[in-house]
Length: 197
Image 1 (cartoon, rainbow, N blue to C red):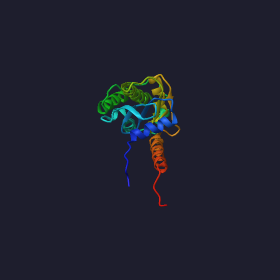
Image 2 (cartoon, rainbow, N blue to C red):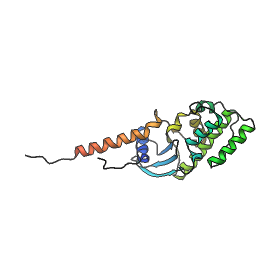
Image 3 (tube, rainbow, N blue to C red):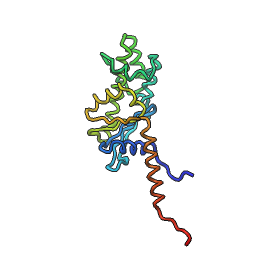
């Protein structure tokens, strides 16, 4: 029976902190939302910002672009790195951003340049969120979008500091949940229980 409730935000923070205890910030970018997290010295969440109101700031935006451009989402990470003239996407609304992409296509811009522009756009929005939680340097980048090399490069250029990359970025939240569960189990096991003489 469940007797404790832990959010995925808390789990992600604990997983990231366990892997990279020197970092004080976490960027979690998935399909549904992007979250910037500031950590306390013990790895607990101090503050956070999320963008879940609009898909233009998350991995779901990249999926929509891929459908429109008819490219596989698994290919755009490397494709982005081949861009020669990245096309900026300035709109903060997914619908308006798609209009910009349509314009880029009609102007004959390459798919690589459009994808790279999308990565740079997401990186810029992520930096804004990180700054809202006091970002200074060194961030752990987690979530499914981290599997895209072009997104990592865009963040490196935008952030300026070190970016710590877990080996399995999409599993850091689950890793954190396992650690928290183990910690709670160990605390309960250490609690003395009464026994019959």
